[in-house]
Length: 506
Image (cartoon, rainbow, N blue to C red):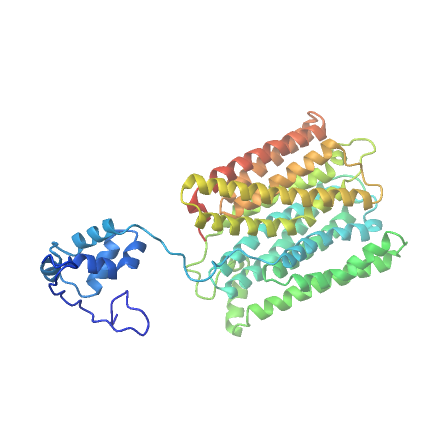
């Protein structure tokens, strides 16, 4: 640097300080003024903002002060001794940075609501395709859906990891290889469930599950690459047909065409986005990779053009897939618990599933709000206990807001949905506890603590599955107990984590 660190713009100060001259005191006492007072006054702002004496010593040395000069002028042994005395003399004062603080977690509410909408609209495909699924088995549909959720959650994390490293091409390559593989896995799972199940209607359900797997893969590509509006446009034909099919008898061929148009549009848009994000390679590279077959596909999964030396490990995406499995099963049990238990007269609690899915948009916005408000609390707090209280208050506010949104959606859906089951006390409590489980699990996931969240959700889903298979207890009471246990454990993990300031780093 050409001048001292305390030199302002447009000022000119000699690099080396001028030796102070002896002068008379204010009342002519003959005592010389202490040169350290003048130095402390000149460096007051820098010393007050220093967090350690060594920082001041570095400033002194950068200004050209040698140990000999310090001994001669200030009577101290070296720059470190002088820095320690300045540090002790001037009280700490840490100025705020100029301008309002930037919130890196700030997102628009409209975009989050749009994502929640495109999460929920695909459920209308079951409404539009109801005549095609009359008498169909549940096993192929559930097997295909769960496989897709697990795979695409892990794939999304893989692609987002590349985007976080600034390598959009590698993210597109992950999606290019992973999305078709996910569609094949979903189709295979549905086919295996159809083979293993007895009774009519298994293969029509497997065919519907194949279309479902294709859609999930295409939607994953579009959502990861920020094409929510394109996906919404693709879903419009199916959505319009589903809405019309409620009051009117839409012919089956028209239903099939509308479903096919939305599916084809989603796949076509996903392919176009991938072509734009992952440019064409030379023909010899395509030929060489084609010769490697399945093993080459496995090796290239998530690999960037640069050879993949810095690629994120594949194992880091596994907990995200398990989290998708656990939460997916809990949501399914919320909607289908009575039906799967074989209760006479049981119906699907579709409004609960729709409310949970639609609430994911506000949930995402509230998660970002919690992270942003936590950073603001971190800046304003002076002790760890004060920060913990501030973070806990923000957590309670955001979780209460999410549960209020979920409650309103559940009540509205129950009132509007034809022949919907009554939203009694047990069902409502279970729904809100499942919502708490989902939101706190997603919050832990945003902190990077996805392993604990996945373990709790998978354990809860396993416990409910075991109770269903063994017939132990009432399905509703078991679901309430499992949801309460999972919500309590995840809330405890969040409270332990949010009190550590280091967990809130960007």
